[in-house]
Length: 428
Image (cartoon, rainbow, N blue to C red):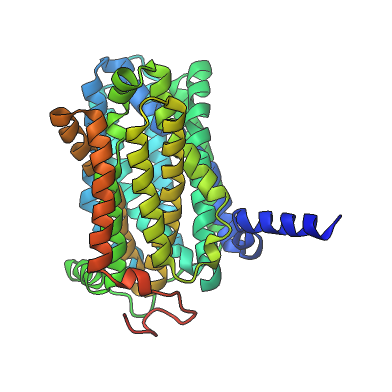
């Protein structure tokens, strides 16, 4: 093998996602593998539950109501869930939340096995599962920095995103096959079985006790997390820049209209519009090995959000070429996952351990609400000026908002990762 061939292969390995956290950090590896398996099961349920509701009601309104039923407990319980995650052993908390989520899937399987299950019962289970998930999310996110050393945290976040994107692409396809061949009840039962992997992984890792200075869950402790996020401007900047990208640059609500009236590609085109960002995000995560070497992640976030906004503008302009439009959406998806990895790493590294659960819950609220606000913004503009104008103007507003965010939060450009612990360096 020539020296140039060796250098080429070494360079390619440098682009691929860094698997060092999986290889070197046992507890992270266990949780990652368990979550990879159970994540497929959760995706099956994500697909199977709306399908079951449609079969029972033949109403799109019932699907929209499901989204609302699941959003309410997330908004209500997330901040409290973060406070709980800071105050207790996160391993024990995750065992409890995973067991409860498995129980919710058991209930869905039992209901689906009935000839005519009550629709209200499905909503009740969905509400409860979303509430438990609002506690599980902050606990899982805040546990990650305790599983890997600081120098491998960005790589660990990228690996998690890779598995998440893989599951989001493969899970729904597997769900369709499973529902077609075995029925909805079997799909829910499969989800229950996959929770065994997650629970086994959690039982095999070391405890993750709370920080000695952790506060008891209370309204005061929740307020403490909110005050930290507001006062630590680099953290607040990551929330604001994500809202800018999602509220103005998220065109997914327009995909049905674009597929049917602009691109004229029908149902198949609608499916491709939805798949393109996910495929781009999967590719972005797979080739994220370089992300762990970034020492100024704020600058990386700015570049990634600029790429996202520019790709959305190009998508809206390239209505004459459906393949090129799909490429633009894929590029946007790749930029989005890089932004997410870098933003997450900033939040986790800057936040002290005793506050990570609460700050992670705020981050979860931003990530949850942003796309929904974006759907509303895109639909409102499209109703007045048309779908194409909504997409292009949204992308341009995202770029304009990005400039405003950088001017308002110069910390994004100046922030540099430190090997010291949170609190050891002063805020710029």
